[in-house]
Amino acid sequence: MTGQKIEYILRQQKEYFSTGGTLPLQFRLQALGKLKAAIKKNDKMLCQALYSDLGKSRAESYMCELGLTLSEIGWMEKNLKKLMENRLVKTPLAQFAAKSFQSPCPYGNVLIMSPWNYPILLTLEPLVDALAAGNTVILKPSAYAPESSLAVKRLLEECFPRKYVCVVTGGRQENQALLRQRFDKIFFTGSPVVGKEVLRHASKYLTPVTLELGGKSPCVVEKSCNIPLAARRIVFGKFINCGQTCVAPDYILCDESIRDELVSSIIKEIKRQFGSRPMENKNYGKIVNEKHCQRLLSLIMPEKIVFGGRCDAKACRIEPTVMVDVDWEDAVMREEIFGPLLPILTYKNINDAWKMIEDRPRPLALYCFTENPLVKRQMLSRCRFGGGCINDTVIHLATSEMPFGGVGESGMGSYHGKAGFEAFTHYRSIVDKKTWFDLPVRYQPYTKGMLKLAELFMR
Image (cartoon, rainbow, N blue to C red; front, side, top):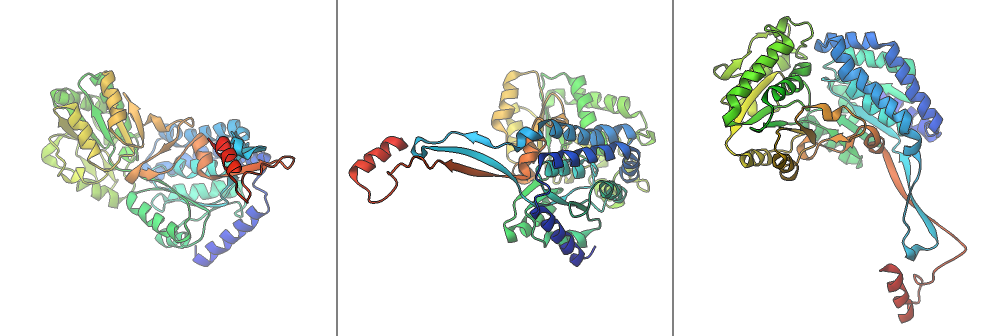
């Protein structure tokens, strides 16, 4: 799509927003209802697109993409009326007589740029929040998931006119054309490298931005943990979607005294969940494209493999791979893995583990397996990270009741549920001052008596 056409669509959306048509509660609820019905009607098309792009099974597609999107819609439908209400706050005595409140207002014209790893969920879920907040939206799905992008485009064209919601497909040229426009809000999910470019463009117009990025999310395994259960939950979180999950455990940091037992349990769990030949398992997905497959292969160190390592480059499939004796200087530890490679590092003292984590960029997620209450408290007091779990992985993002987002290099801002509505909403602070009474203390000429009166009111 040309830059000129993008400008025209944005102009249409600005004109439509200015009519106030997106603001009423009933309109927003109808939009959410249309989207929900369309997802249910087209679930086979969406699942087929996910299988084509990422080899996702129907069960995984529903559990990790369609189901979570429908859950977010349901939460919004239930809570939207309350979210749209003004929030009353206390009024200082010095402003007597008045009523003070926060008034929610949609930003207006929103750009949502989504990634390829969860191309349905991470396109439609922020869309749900943006529509609930009363905005118009231009969506830009990733070119790396072409079938999913096309499916989203068909789905949304069935639901909405493009003056309200428009999907722009394409690659870098379209991304640049969109970022040159003046939006009221930009919501981006992707890599930190591209996130910096989005932020640079947004700074031209001081456009508010939510960045959902990534990073190397640690998984600390402390010696008091239930090792077999920890292994089971780590394998689930790490290898779902072939490790192409922003909150997947990127690496394990475990007590050196339990390393061998943990490794043995992880290998046992991989075989249990995916079979002894994972690449023959129809429910085990694939790497998104050859470029990413080759990048992952360059991170594998054959001499450190204790399980896996085999690859079908033509099919873009790499089996779950576990590596030990890894150190911080190895290539696999110098970038976010985003694939089915699991390096295992060790520590002697739990305090060393917290220091290793804190000495590095803030992760999007942190996981800790332990039965020790002190270790749980240390995790929360010693480390800065986006979110996480104690004795599990990845499930903290699967709820509309908690905000999801990063900190530092793993992102800024959050969404899901109430936080999602707020991400696409500006809250105006309003004082409604009454006219039947007027305190004279703020007006000149100032006298000693009026100063004492002001001190009394403003303490």
